[in-house]
Figure 1 (tube, rainbow, N blue to C red):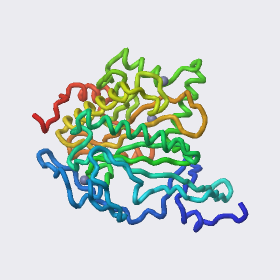
Figure 2 (cartoon, protein in one colour):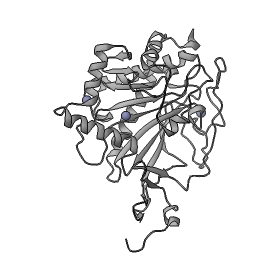
Figure 3 (spheres, rainbow, N blue to C red):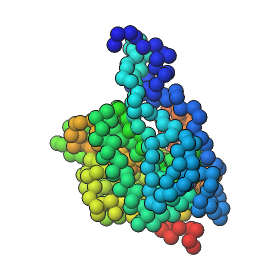
Figure 4 (spheres, rainbow, N blue to C red):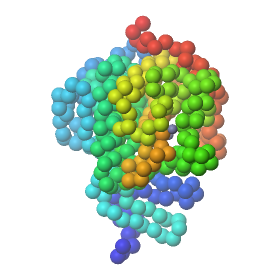
Length: 353
Ligand SMILES: [Zn+2]
Ligand SMILES: [Zn+2]
Ligand SMILES: [Zn+2]
């Protein structure tokens, strides 16, 4: 690079900065200021949201904050985020001042996936027939974005509920596709590689799933080709890990039958979550899968994490603070007890009783 970029150059674009204390990166999106907020406090049971909200920027036919109008969609709807944290046209640059001030451009794409035209639904309140097209959209978007040469990773996720920072209650998720592999999947990739290296090429998650299925104490539900369990090492009180039984590296490798199973499992699991405290259960969930950086990555085993914050009731949540922020995460409820509680819950939604 001819001239050394300054901090002002860095701050003109989305970029990542290196944290030498942790050996990982932080995403900075300086342009993203006027993001709309339509979040709200968690609704309590009985407080029914409307099927259509004329002020919601995700409902069919409504105008979004950026000035675009949504079509009168009847199933799923995908669009480029009007306030993206990442921009595809970000110019390539690296800024480096010794070994301590290291930053570089992070081009990327942010999309929004509306799961349903109905403002009042959640995954738990959608039928399997309504949810299956959402699985197909995730697969199609992962394939299309992953095929772009500048994209190394496609992160699909959902923040549900104001407690997790969701900016709108309309059922929707997000996709952030990035030029580099983010911290969390990168850390898991190293663990998968190192386990395979130490165990004659075996897969950490295949071996782990076989162990959990033989013991059953942390399994929550099985749905054909997919299993949901509370991981032995789970941090959040009712955290779950959803794993396909077959060693598949990514979403697009799922068969049609496996996609059916995934849709059914998600409906069943989120219904149990809602029934736990008889409230629309907040969570962050998302897939981890093979990077699309051109390498084969046969070590990867697709999976889905659910990180829900609630601990004891619809209003008492766990915070990661103090020792947990500075030392090591801590939990009181054991993963075995959490799995046992989730197992005993009905799959008839509390609002339908
Ligand atoms: Zn809406
Ligand atoms: Zn595997
Ligand atoms: Zn993961």
